[in-house]
Length: 480
Image 1 (tube, helix red, strand yellow):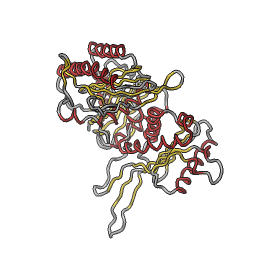
Image 2 (cartoon, rainbow, N blue to C red):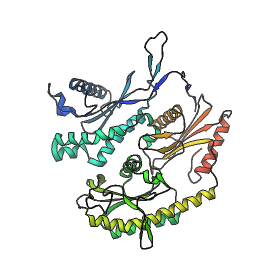
Image 3 (cartoon, rainbow, N blue to C red):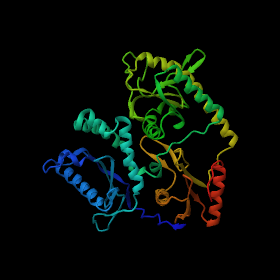
Image 4 (cartoon, helix red, strand yellow):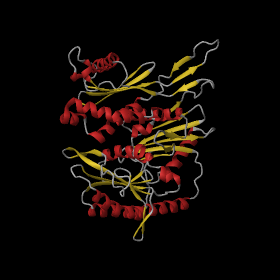
């Protein structure tokens, strides 16, 4: 299938405005069924300074839209509403609890002559429902990771407790949403895995086993290096959302010491013959401080009888991080933290050096990396493995991409086409800016390639993608 993309151009003096969050609210229509009680339906509303009647009116409108669409398809309620200026996204994560996110469409401000006010043009088709629908689902998943379900809060302390929890969580979380840089990776919500040789992998497995044996309180362990996952004892969906929290929130907040100098430690200590660069990213900042608090964040993960509550201990040495999860019923003491620090610190420091050494050797063998003619995103639905050469380093505030937003939009459009069919498929798009974009879907795997080849034809593009599959994915079978 071959498509031509729209032209990527606009006047140099035009001002471009990216999508932004207009409002975000959570309501339950059963909480204020009578007239005059409508305000009781609203559990959370951002921005909070909006006048009460406007909040009630906006929630009422969403209720009406959901009810109206249910008459056509009772099992599939509305997911989004498109208007000229904005787009609304609806999500019902638990029965009768609705999350609504309203995003202002990107717009272009064109200056007028003769001192007239500028003309505003809204770009109504620029936002992708799949991307922002995934962002809303992520908001709920992240809330659930730290608080459990809405129903759990209702059982524990009724509506008052739920409102309290929602306000505490979303007041902070919504500030971390950067809607202008949301793209295909938000749809996938995948995990980047660190490539390792067998010997080093076995060392890590052995380290995890030793620690879990010595500190029997530990229920689950996850091991990461350079923000990439190597080992996890958690269920896939729990690890997916914990990985998102670690790599976009916790790690960026603590990366300063490593950025100051190559893996410069906060406290190099010698324990026996071993260097000890370990430190807690959650819990006590300094074990030697008599005022140190031994409180760790609690998370909820799925268990056979619903979910279980755990303490989350994240411990880091150089570029290696180990996450230890312990039942929330256990009280964690100074003694336990000192024991964990003494046991894990030296071993993790040693492992971090081993991995770094191995990684450097592998890079030397593979030779210097030339700037490739293509960039790609790969995702495997079975193990959530994700790899992107389009995305540069994530920071706490933004995820940078090395290609034009219009090309990212084409990738999202291809992904939407793939989602509509079950069969394997390939789509090739020629963009107006001399770029070729190729999407391949094969056996639960998706590959998106952007090629910068001005004079290439369809056959040459196809050959180039085959070469990429042979070099980058030689152990993965893509159907032709």
